[in-house]
Image 1: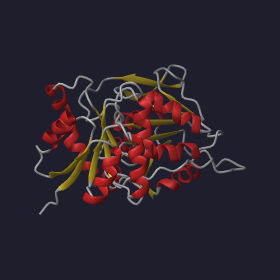
Image 2: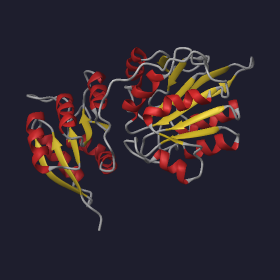
Image 3: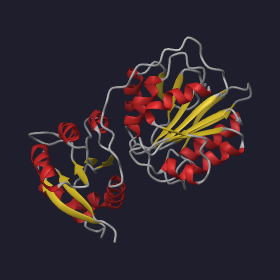
Image 4: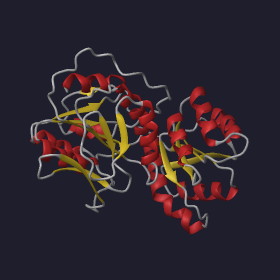
Length: 342
């Protein structure tokens, strides 16, 4: 018998609480155990009801969503899916993910029933996935490890694919890479449209390497990390001078995600051959499996984040089960594992 996913809904709008209840109740695998009007009430109800997953608005009176997430994670980590407009500032969304929320669903700005119901399928899937997640309690990134001599240059590019739990995980990984990194890094992070540029800027402030959202046409430079913009695929291309540039495109249109880890990995293998180090980290689904197979076919190397540190062990699991992983590494050891190989 499949266990029901017990959900607590948190939103200051009675209307939104009602609609979210209707949306989640479509699934026979989800049970609504309560609904709270603000963060303070949610803390009490979470303590009493012990839900598996909490859906949470960000803009609320008394105690807002970010404050609630921080307080709940300090008490007892629970998988939290943010459901919010947050239209006036993407910073709230990033703060919520940084505080420990495992995922985010963009609430339509127009709160008519038909618009709200558009997110029903996405919300149901993310709540069910969140029930299998292991929330990552927020902690400050550590400075780069001191290295007198950089390791032997065995690769020319590091490509990273990451999804659920990614904003927090990258905040712990990328700041551990030194300013003298001898290769560029290209990253596909599954995030809603409109948040990757702000996220890249925030990550850049914490990091010794230069982090930026890819604009397309940039010359790949060592010591730089390029984050794919949400809504467009990031691929790599070599020009007539032999230089490698970033390229952005909405095509292919039939991928489950845009940007696609598979698209980035496939292009990196085509350009760099065996000198690609691919990293597949926390996230649901199997994006990156086909791209990893192509990297391996070209003689490259794939590392996967170990189940012990993943928020969601989905993408890495798909690589391991396909026999494509050259090593499983915990999040806190991933930077050293990368540096040892490049």
